[in-house]
Length: 138
Length: 138
Length: 138
Length: 138
Image 1 (cartoon, one colour):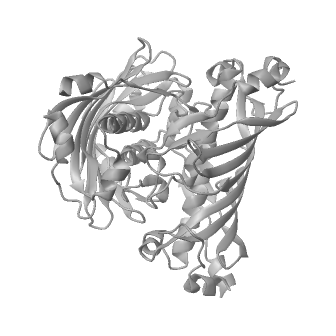
Image 2: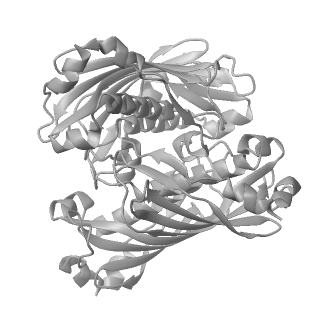
Image 3: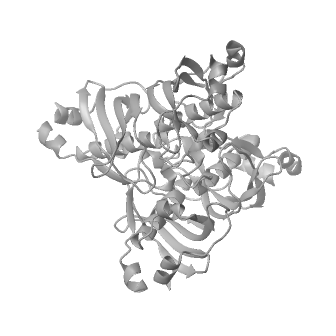
């Protein structure tokens, strides 16, 4: 079931707007961090969960750590594709490999390895990934 | 021709991500300013122009002034629709009325009247709206 | 007492970083909206209140409406000064006139008239400006 | 000389504003990436260079890669301190270790290892770190 669901998650497409760029004429590097979070959010939604609901259950997914490698820059008006693949599942965290590419066969812009931890919104302490989600990733 | 082209411009849909929100639990007010710029950029593209190309011809569209009225806030995970209607065309500026709504009949979040001026990228001085564009808006 | 306290509120100084600029080589217009919010936040703090505390009392200050006029752009590495003057006080709202200038006598970049409403965080409904604050503005 | 100059670079202090936070009630993770860039920019300025000038000489410093580890979150109204220490200097890149802390002995929020590459703005190709800067770091 995992394979099927994962296979159904397509890279998300986003347009590069002025807000994403900087005076160097390219996409500002921190913008890629936002783009990877957008894709993880859609990946989660694709599995039937959304952050506003998890908040209501005192659960938040927060970024524990990330490794970013920047290659070729995306530019104004480009469309980018942001992928989201699970590489590791633990009791209280999920690790993703993500790529940001210029759409339709363009340059690879950024590779990100991102570990997301599940925490209690109230205490900030680690807590287990919700069983529903874990079951789908089992 | 104008009416037909204008009619073909649909409100742009965007998802609200964590990046757009603030600690008040709602969309940060300056995010709406970004959303209206996204829709104007797509409106321009719909007429055959994109900013990265106008930059190459020493032409930039910059916001001259704007009036914003904030109504009900959008929230995390909402989809919003951003409209873009031309209300006035002058030699060196175009004025838009724009609305940001929660999609599919949801609340009106923000109304914006935005005057965009055409300037020379090199000098910052006003210059005429490109004739191609003006013709389409005539 | 008002005059003295107001007089003690100096324009806030901020550096322009890459994050504030766009591919047009200047400060992105929505960044000025953020800058005016920073100065209003410091103005409020200068009167003894901070947003994180007002949130705890179910009170939030939200932007009701704003009129922005953009003049000369600020650029990367500039220092800007952001002023914050009260122009009107009502039961449930405060109106400010704000200017963003390049520091030390540089260009006026943006003028903003901003009306901030006091609302209940829980209901989103207007509520009275906290009496402490109102007293200081009386 | 290096030690003296480095010693003269103090951690930069920044206030956390609404713009830096998200609906989870804490600082949005990508904001830390912006904060580390602010501090590197001031570190560079402290050595006599600013980005707007390097751009004029076809030189840009771009982030090549970064490793981020997020610990305790900063919150609205906090003041943070962002450090910037050089850990490696190569012909065409400089590596930094940076920490973001809540000011005056507060929590460590984020640790970042950041490798910045020197490139030609025109071609995007790696180029040598400017000799002036290299001499100061020798």
